[in-house]
Image 1 (tube, rainbow, N blue to C red):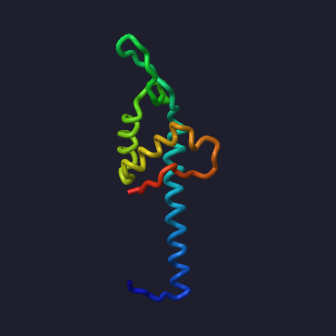
Image 2: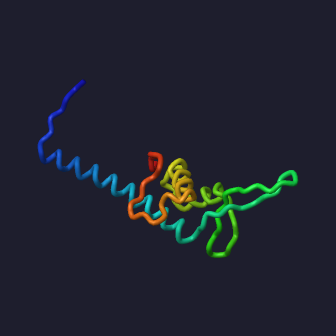
Amino acid sequence: MKRIKITEKQKEILAKMELNESRDYEMILKRVVDDLNLNYTPIAGTYRKGGEYFEKPMIKIEADGDMITPKELLVYLRYKNKNLSDAFLKQIILDWANGRFSGKKEYSLSKNVSIN
């Protein structure tokens, strides 16, 4: 194991970079969640299979009232946010649909996922 020595000034610069990264993560997460809250509503849709009715998670588009699946929402978010990873977007949709972000000021995912 090698050790390196850094000055106090370098330590302060590294600390600022670390803080900026965490703030950027939260800002990106907040931007996507606010977009979801403004334009979509998670609902339970029903479908019939073999004479029985089952519930399925669906997403209602506020602009026209159409319903889409979470996979279709993921495809759209992937198109809209090309620089974000699929795993990150999936986790946002999952946490958003489960109500994790409702009424909170701080935004954090239930599972740590990389942005890229």
